[in-house]
Amino acid sequence: MLGIPVRGMIVIGVLGVAGVMYLANGGKPMGGDTQPKICKITVTADILNVRSGPGDMQPIVSTMPRDAVAPAEARVENGYRMLSDRRWVSQQFVALTSDSTCT
Image (cartoon, rainbow, N blue to C red):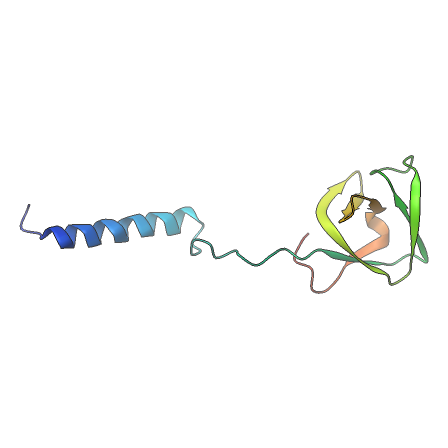
């Protein structure tokens, strides 16, 4: 067909599809974002109230001392960050650790 061998057409087709997939993924290789998201917080207040929900009116379920480190989620609601155990802390009294990749 048009003087191009079938094998050559297959190679051109595969390269074309790979190029389209590369561009559709924002110029990054497919599966290139395989590193797990790390999200940890450090307490910056003297004593931090840990609440059952994202708000000042939610019950306090525990406290954390200054410089305590805890695993967290990327989820922030009403100025509160969710910890990995589904409890909440005020975002203004925590900082992400230096190895965190969440925002």
